[in-house]
Length: 390
Image 1 (spheres, rainbow, N blue to C red):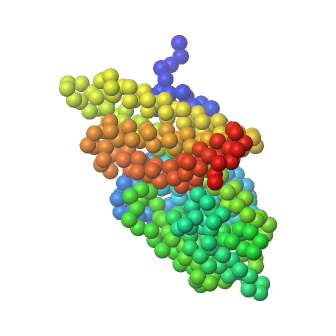
Image 2 (image 1 turned 180 degrees about the horizontal axis):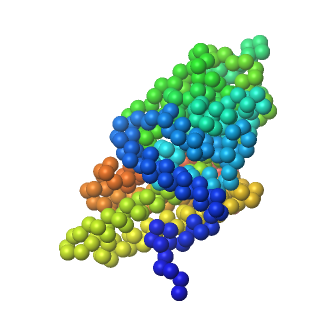
Image 3 (image 1 turned 135 degrees about the vertical axis):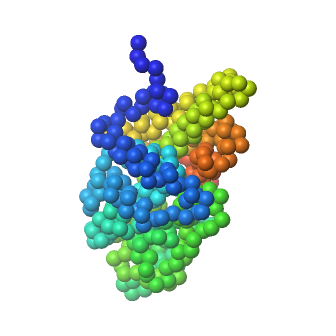
C-alpha cells in the first residue's frame, strides 16, 4: 500500500521535477518564506515595494531572465522558470509580475529581437538586477487590440522621434530601460528606450484595489529622440510584442498555481484549527466538500502547468497551448481564492491571511496578458479554424 497522499501535493506532482528543478524550487521557496512573505501584507497595504532591494535579491538567486541563454542569464529549463513563478506567486502575484516583466517581457524582447549591441549593453545588468526594465505596449485606448496603438515613431534624419502614451506598465517608475512598441511607416516596431532620455516621463498609477504590491506606471513620450540603433533591427508588426506576451503568459499559468495553493492551504489550516459547535470546521460535510473542490482545482491546474512546461522544454509548445493554460489556470485559481475567502468567514477579509489579497490580485491577472475572452476566442479559432475576434 502506498503512503497516504500529501494534502499539500496530493498527486505528488513535484516528483516529476528533475534534481535541478527541485533545487530551484527549494531555493525560491526558502527565499520567499524568509524575505517576502513576512513583508508582503505591509507592501500591499501601503502600495509600496522596495524595488531595488528586490531586484538585487532576485538577481542573486538568478531569477531574472533565468530561462534565457547567455549574457549572464542562468539558462535554466522552462519548467524551472515556471516553478520559480509558482513559488513567487504563492506569496503574491505582484512579486511574480516583478520577475515576469523583467525577464519574460523586457529581457526576452531584447534577447529575442535586439541587436548584439543592445543585448550586450542591457542584458548582463538586467540579469543581476542592477538595471530594471519595463515593457510599453498597452495604451489607454489599446489593450486587447494592440494593433490600434497610437504611439508613433517617425524618422528625423537618422534618428527616431517617439510620441505617445503607454498605460498599466509594471515597474515603469523604477525602470532604467523601457521596451516601447510604436507605429512606424513600415509597421509596428520595438525600441529600446533609456528612461533618462529627455521627453520620457513615468507617472505612478495610484488608487489600485488589486496588485498593490506592484509598481504600476503611465509612460508618456513627448518628442523622445533616439538614435537609429535604438530600434529592434528586424522584427515588424505584432509578431514582436505578441511573442513576448506569450513568454509572460507562460509564467502566469504557472504562477497562479502558487496563488491557488496558498489559498487552499490557508483554508485547510484554518478550518482544521477553527472550532464551532464543538468541533473543527473541517469536520463538517459542507466544509469538506469545499476542501475537496479546492484540492481538485489546485492539482488540476498544477497538472496543466507541468504538461505545458514539458511541451515548452521539448520545443513542442504552440501559443494556443499557453492560451489554454492561462484561461484554465487563472479561472481555477480565482475560484479557489473566492471559495477560500468565504471559508475563513470574517477573517477572510483580513490582511493577516493571504486569501483576499490573492483574490483581489487574481482579478487583475484574469484580465492582463490577454483577457479571459481573448484567450477563449484564441482557443475557439484553434479548434474551428475560424477567427471570431472582429
